[in-house]
Length: 177
Image (cartoon, rainbow, N blue to C red):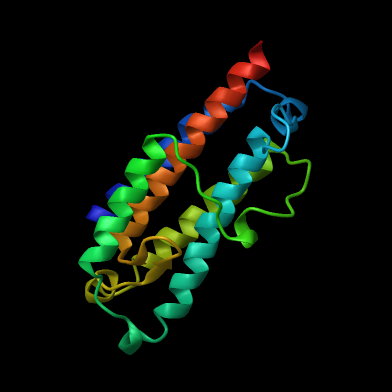
């Protein structure tokens, strides 16, 4: 199994653990706004799905033009490290509107799970068709970190997921009180 497939398997394991943990709640509970002006548990999940789908869409477009791909700069590696550290320390950043605004109020957890699993499967299949040289180039341009290769992108998926998992667990605690 390639390093990329291992990384995706780690992401899938995290995903399955989260959905298994949340399966004990009703959709009404998971859609409940627990903290004013904040997302529900399901809206946090929806945001994560949108972020990954948007990233995949961007990568699909960029990789159609391999001659335009550039090397990842050391400054991007430093920025992604600092972004990860800041999220672990509890800082938050507003993402682009396309992944943070105008969410539906109601979701079914089972549909979110099916959508995310399908999206991950498609992403994995697509990434595995790309040339290794292309994967080491800056195939994704993150708004804060800049150009990222596939390994940095998958790492972003992991720590972005972990950041929202913490939020989800805090919301879950409030559901139980």
